[in-house]
Length: 115
Length: 112
Image (cartoon, rainbow over all chains, first blue to last red; front, side, top):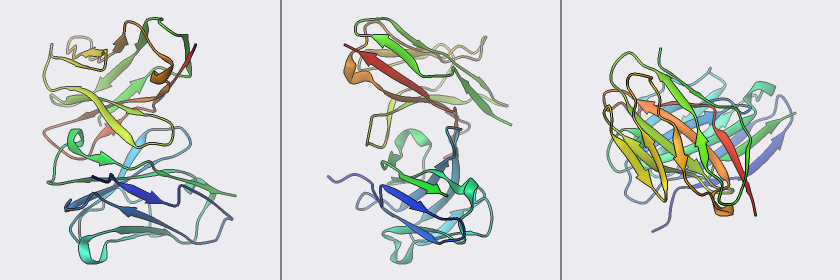
């Protein structure tokens, strides 16, 4: 069974540009989560989808971030325009049912560097 | 609010050395506690967990005991291997919430 995949693995962009990150959850997992680890700090929750609906987006830092999950399969996270403080590792996770983190499966992350 | 504090890394050890990575937490209720590991190029993987005081989680030779009196969940392994080199994250969640609180992570480097 394929795990959670994320694309790209790395992205280097300039301040002001736009970047789109993609996450493909495990097939059949209705729940999809985005997290972010900024500059070696804590991993922070960003948002949670159930199928195509946003269940909780309380962790989204500001309106420069837009997450979508059209069709309830893969998800994208767009940052527009990117700022220096957006640099970090963006993780995606999925689970079959809404659950505590112990049963979420994480992807390898996308490393974003904004110059 | 809830918080998790981990010891600063990197932790550098020789193979077969004893490992301890300290983790303490602050929570309003009675959280579940977790250790996650991220091997190079891979996603976070659940290593072990404990859901109530005095529970011991164990997996792959790693152990951690939920100590309510000291609000700690230290990770230990008696004899580390090169393959244990990774970043280790301590985390908690309260009441079954899917919104976890993570520590900053501790990088472990094991030399042959």
